[in-house]
Amino acid sequence: MSSDAQKPDAPRPDSAAVERFRTVVLPHLDDAYGFARWLTRDPVAAQDLAQEAMLRALRYFHSFRGGEVRPWLLRIVRNTWNDQRSRSGANQQPLETIEDRPADGPDPEQNALAGDRRRHVAAALAALPEEAREVLVLREIEDLSYKEIASVLDLPIGTVMSRLARAREKLAVELRGRLGRSEHGLPDV
Amino acid sequence: MDCPTCETLVDAYVDGELSAAESADFERALGRCPECLRKLEAARAMSGMLRELPATPAPDLLRARVNRELGAVAGAARPAMPRERMRWSAIAASIVVAASLGWLGGNLTGQGGHETDELVAGYIRVAMSDRAVDVVSSDRHTVKPWFAGRIDYSPPVHDLKSDGFPLDGGRVDFVDGRKVAVLVYQHGQHKLALTLWPSASASSASAQVAQRDGFSIAEWRRKGFELRAVSDVTSDEMASFAKALDRALDSDS
Image (cartoon, rainbow over all chains, first blue to last red):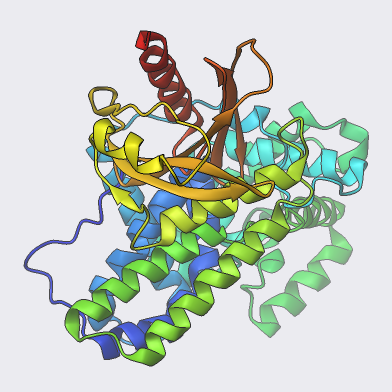
């Protein structure tokens, strides 16, 4: 399970730093949680991950040198996720739990047809291997630029672009398996 | 696939990564290459589908947990200022309201969503409060008598430490206008609130576990008691709690 990973040698933020953190970083908690959901593919594990990442972000906040907060925070979420997994022996969430779950929508009474398609799209994205999933989520859902994605994933921009292209091909294959070919307008690769 | 423009530029164009001049070149190339156009439409369709996925905002409980941690860090550095303390209680109040509103549509229990609202609101009070319990003890012989005189029945009290759910203590809450016993258990970093009251039915019903908004909720009936458990543990952990409690209840004569 999660631990707050507060190392004894970490510089302790004073209350002014915490106030600044509340103003600058806390407004992006939704992004941290959203990304955590796609990484963990589990709403409960995502809460633990987002919480641990926020505390870690607070600990590193003194080294934040301005600029865009979201890439900085999402990078911490991803690193925390990698650490959590290596702590727990890299056990992967079984996929069935995703696909069985009704769509991610907070509104269960949304238009049935659109809801159905969203459910298929969400399931297809969730079914992708992590390398493809994370780059697509950062681009299409978190709406980061290539440069920002490169900083989150710690990769050169060229690698981000080729991963994104491969991820889109994989998603197209997944979607074709889940949606009728006629209704989604995706041609053959 | 023989058009190099398709391979290299469609994604970058859709992603808004081309300069104005590059975009103009690409748009000119589109007119000459149906393959580019087809790829562009496919890329836009996929992007549109991903972008219409509903956002999943952070649950109130997560927000409250993070706020509590931030408050603890700030408080450790310097005694909390009254302003901060006031803000915290305002946040806590809004969480209970928000959680209750969010649950109005719920109908987990046969008796309607209202009871579930109250149980979750009660759980949030337990999870958020620094004084989660009114009687702090893992000893059933301390907790059980404490309820006498506070509620009109005597709840079975068990410490489930050996099953990974040590008893924190107890408190009294209201469900459907009735005073009920709440036992608070710990599981790792998570708290679990078990609310129980005498059942009108003599039969047993095994535990049903449901997930809502990151909460696990179990409801069941055993040994003449209605049992409701709420926590932010996983469904599996909730199910193992219910099993452990059943074993303890069955061991009572």
